[in-house]
Amino acid sequence: EVQLVESGGGLVQAGGSLRLSCAASGLTFNDVAIGWFRQVPGKRREPVSCFSTSDRVNYIYESVRGRFTVSSDNAKNTVYLQMNSLKPEDTGVYYCGAEEGISCAVRTPVPDYWGQGTQVTVSS
Image 1 (cartoon, helix red, strand yellow):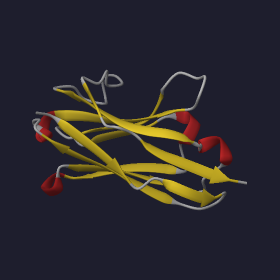
Image 2 (spheres, helix red, strand yellow; image 1 turned 135 degrees about the horizontal axis):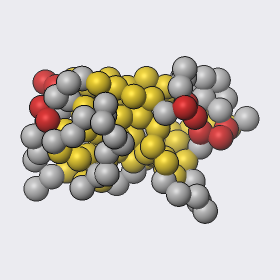
Image 3 (cartoon, one colour; image 1 turned 60 degrees about the vertical axis):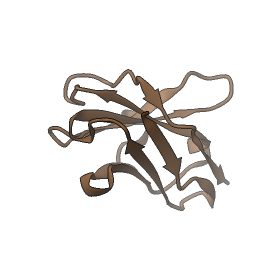
């Protein structure tokens, strides 16, 4: 059974930082693209980052570029999203999603598996 478990969300003031973790189990971690996505009420879920473990390509989407970074620890089967200089508009539920066998150099993952989400709230 594939499981993705997010953690690290919370309440932070504008300008602060959070680090989200996505711990994966039950899939081939050395050949998977893990995307971080966020969703706010009334809007579509949007990608913010991608990390593919086979080639260690990482991609940060324009809306958060320069403030967010993504990394992984293969020994822990975990992908991290470091979020700095947070803004109120970063508020939302952050999900990690996984698609096996693709690279972030090719396209945004279309996840076959999703975590439960973690709430990030940035106060002004």
